[in-house]
Length: 364
Image (cartoon, rainbow, N blue to C red):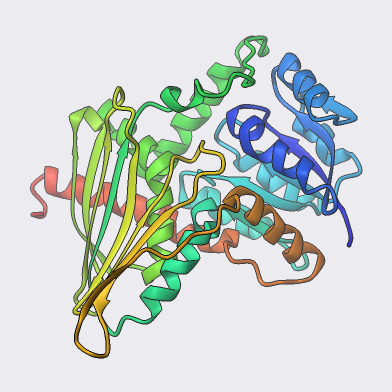
C-alpha cells in the first residue's frame, strides 16, 4: 500500500486530539513528514510528541518540501494556504470552516487541477452511525419534516478532559491580530459590513453549525429555499427554516449554552410512517459512537422501534482513510471541496434572509 507523505499545518486542539494521533496510527497509509505552526513551541512539541522529523513555522516551507499532501487545520482563514497548496500540486485535506465567502471557495476551486484530491474535512459524514442512518432514510418513501438540534456548551468543558493538550503563546508579534483582521475581511466579503451580533452568529454558523448543514445536505439533499431565519441571544443562537422542493421543511436551531456540560446534536428525519433520529457525540470525543434510533410501521402494520448497533470506529480515522483511498486508488471523494460551496452559499443565504426580515423587506 502506497504511503502518503503529509505535512500538517496547525498544531492546535484538533490536530493534537484527532489528526496527528490518527495519522500516526494509520502508519501504513501516511507518513507525517513535517508539522507547522506559527508558534515555534507548538510546532516543536507536536514534532516531539508524534515523532515527526521536521517542524517549521511557515506553511510555505511545507509546500516547498517533499510532501504529497497537506492537512490544513490552522487558525482561519485557510484560503491563502489552500490555494497555494493546490497550485503547488499538493493534495488537500482542509478542516472546517473551509472558508467564509464565495470568492474564497471559488479561488480554491479554480486552483484545483485534475489529478488532485481536495477533501473538506466533513467528519460527520464519515460517522458509522451517519452511514447507517443514511441507509434508513433511503428506505423512506417521502420525507415530510427534518429537524436539527444543536445545543452547544463551551468547548473548554470538553477540552479540559485532555491532560495532554498543550497550548503555547509564543506566536510572532502581531500574527494573531493579522489573522483576526483577515477573518473580518473575509466576513465582510461574504456578508458585508454588519454589526457585532450578526458577525458573531456568522462565525458560529461557519465554525459549528456547518456540521449540521453539510450533514443535512448529504442526507436529504440541498434545500430549495431559506424560508425563515432568526438570530438572537446577541448572536449566540440561530434558528432557520429551510424548504425543499417536495414541500418538506427543516427546522434548524443552533444555541450556545456555554456552562451546560450536556452537549446535544441530533439530525432527525420524519416520513409518513418512518422516523430516523441520529445523535452525535461532541466532536472532541474519542471512542464514543453515535446513537441511532429508527421507528416505523412494519409490513404487518405493527409499530416498531430499533436502535441498531453502531461501530465504535473513529470518524476522524475513517475520513483520513478515505482521503488516502481517493488519492492512491482513485476512489471518488465523498466530501469534495467543490461541494462545500453549497454550504458556504447556504450560510450566506441564511444571513441574508435574516437581514431581509429585520429590515422589513420580507417576513419570516
